[in-house]
Image (cartoon, rainbow, N blue to C red; front, top):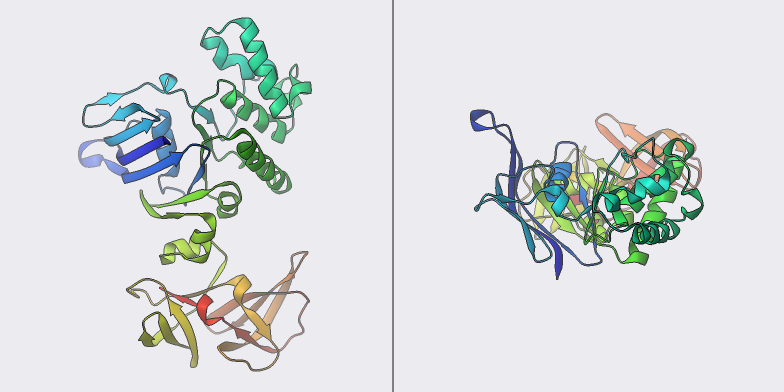
Amino acid sequence: MNELTVDELHLDYGTGAHANPILKGVSMHLQKGEVVALLGPSGSGKTTLLRAVAGLESARQGTIDIGTRRVYDGANRFEMPAEQRNLGLVFQSYALWPHKTVFDNVAYGLTLRRMPGGEIKTRVTEVLGQLGLAHLGERYPHQLSGGQQQRVAIARALVYNPPVILLDEPLSNLDAKLREEARAFLRELIVRLGLSALMVTHDQAEAMAISDRILLLNNGVIEQQGTPQAMYETPDTLFTAEFMGSNNRLPGTLVQRDGSNVILDVAGTRLQGTARGTRLADIAPLVRVEEVRISAGQVDNALPLPLVTCMYLGDRWECLFKSGDISVRAYSRHRLNDGMYWLQMPVEKLWVF
């Protein structure tokens, strides 16, 4: 059974002639124990969708169901208040009360629900233990690290066992190293507790690491959805391919097509590639950076380009090759000497949209 179902949701900012459509008929579902990431660039509608589910934004049309409860019905003009939807919400800023201890921050929602003190203590102690915060209950937010503050915000969202937890860019306030650690912690926590979670992020690596399924939004509609692996390895559109990875875009013209097999002309060099989609509207050749193979000698299906520079990334070098309008990045285990190289593109990985 679905824990969350959204059907044909439309939402505008403004009214009448000045209405600006933000969500344009979005439909999605979230199953029990599943983590779904809402991914997309700024302005795509992902945070607006999360806020509409939470009851913090009012839609114009469509329905929202949490389990068997209908919490929004545009046709019947019914909208359940946010506080009655019983959803756990983790804000981007964490929104902790600075004058309350960790224990009191986590207990706040239960106190508002007039739960008996003994039960509040039991629940809060349990959830603090689950998140490794048991020894920090008497501290205040300013006495915690960023990662600890994030855990307190998650604990507050989990303490009353909501059917769905909503996460709005939960890792964006952390520095790069702590973000990687928190990403692993959050995924482990979600799996261990069997949570159903809907998470907003603009970071494709974060979405792939944490979620079971990704919904990629583009200008208020779902561009593509699927498992992280499917979204990365088999994108349906140019937008999906570009958003889901680090790519090289090549200038080229289509010479021949036979089904999914295509031949391109890239600055006088013939390359074989693979067509994605039934129509090649833009003729946009694209290859992931990690798929390019560097060779010192001539090889098949390759572009000859001079090396411009190499950048050290720790576990590998990122090398830039450039000539005229053509620029290609590729990874190497070792720093390369100046000179001309052949950059081989596997036929099945040189995509044309």
